[in-house]
Image: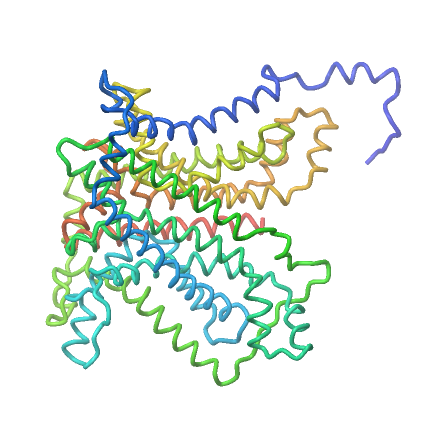
Amino acid sequence: MTVTAGPRPETAAPAQDRGPRRPSVPTTASHYLIWALTLLVVVGPVVPIVLASLWSTPLYRSGGGLTLGNFRDLLTDPAWWTAVGNSAAFAALTTVTSVLLGVGAAVLLSRTDVPLRRLFAALLILPIMLPGLVLIVGWMAMWAPSGYVSSWLEINTFLRFPVDLYTLPGMVLVATSVAAPTVFLFCRTTVLAIDPALEDAARSAGASPLRALLTVTVPLLRPAVLNSALLVFAISFEALGLPLILGFSNNIRFVSTYLYDHWINAAPPNQGLVSAGAVFLLLCVSGLLVLRNRLVGDAARYTTVTGKATATRVVGLGPARWLPAALLAVVLGVFVVVPLAGVVMSAFTTILTPYVTPWSVLTTENFQAIAEHPIWSESIVNSLLIAGAGGLLTTVAIAVVSVVAHRSSFRFRGSLQQAVVWPRMMPGLVTGMAFFWSFAILDPGGAVRGSLWGIGLAFAVRSLALGYGVFYPALAAIGEDLVRAARTSGATWWQAAVSVVLRLCAPAMAACFVLLFVSILNDADPAVFLVTDRTPVMGLTMLQLAATSTGGAVAAFGVIQMVITLAVLGAGRLFLGVRAHA
């Protein structure tokens, strides 16, 4: 390589003439355009919900005017307050049980010598990678009062499953199997990052191992616990599938099922009332975010990684390590292994009962019924198309928005960062309703609303935060000096961003696409207000079947969802592994 001190005077001018052509749109103008489009897609659809809640007639009809009647009807309905109370109690209990199980598992599987730690950790996070509805179907097949395992225990032993799934405690138990892995992942990352020297200092001062754990490690988990607890509470409060399937028989109504019934099952739909309820959900989520910020306080108090960090050490429990291992095995068997086995058994049998051996009633009729039913089979194709195209376009959008939000001097870049994260905290029903009203105003002919593009847009916005969480760490790891080198060589800001930053982030973009594909494929709530007979999707089809039937077709859908999800995740991991070693 030849290194020169600088360009000669006679060659400086020609080099400038051969420089890259200036883009037709200035960089600052493109940043404003991206910022405006992001806010329009993410925040804009919320405006019609507020307007619909304050309007006397549906927005797609002429006439009407401002009114508070929708809020009056909502707040004076005793059924609404019953639903709010049930949702709050369910969310609170689910949060408590999930935090206890998730935090305990994070500490045991990360800092102790409990046997089979890797196997337990893999089983614990498995529900995150699968549709939540699949586990619900599995719980019903195995642990319901007439389920296979609960009936077998009653017939052959003195044991009884202690909780009825069709009650509020039963629904909390099912929800914990889906929510506890979220807490586990949040807290496990923090536990692994805590310097063991901090506990050693407490123990050298005379503290016992238990006291060191309670006074050092547990307080440092506060941000992770609060963040995960907030997320679990918000998701539980607006859950639709679980109360719609398990709460129906005992008339246990949640906020989500209240809104669902007044839109889907009412004649005519009470859309103003439902919009007012959606505004209530948005206010609750906003209040939770404010509460979280106040409870966490100064994040600097929880800094644990320093320049002299010590390698993580495993604490030996001695012979007592087999006791928590046995407890974890029982919990994971009841919460994960048995329900997933129930889904597979229900899908491949004509009837699932302990009075008949499963291998004597094996069948593929449930899968044949899906293949022969035009709406059911079309819903699978539509979901694959939406997940594929939506995942790809959303990955590109996240990459572009993230680069502007974190690698530019754009004055409103902070609002872009918040806008990308906010949709995940917005209930899925509210997301679907927001786009319904937006399409009703902007697309009165229904060309977009009645197409897969409209549903895909709602799913994509719903999954923005998930993709951003995967992409941003890779973006943050790229040094600014690489971009400066490209700019010094004559590249424009966008050329440097695309040729340097995004190229180095290609593995993260691939991982982002895989997770977005799975998330969009398994989502259902936003489709409630957008799906028509011509645009069925798999998640909502399965939800509607599960709410009206416990037949094998629902379990067959669950197996199809599991196979697609695991295949995509496995292919993504294989692809990323190859790329990492290339």
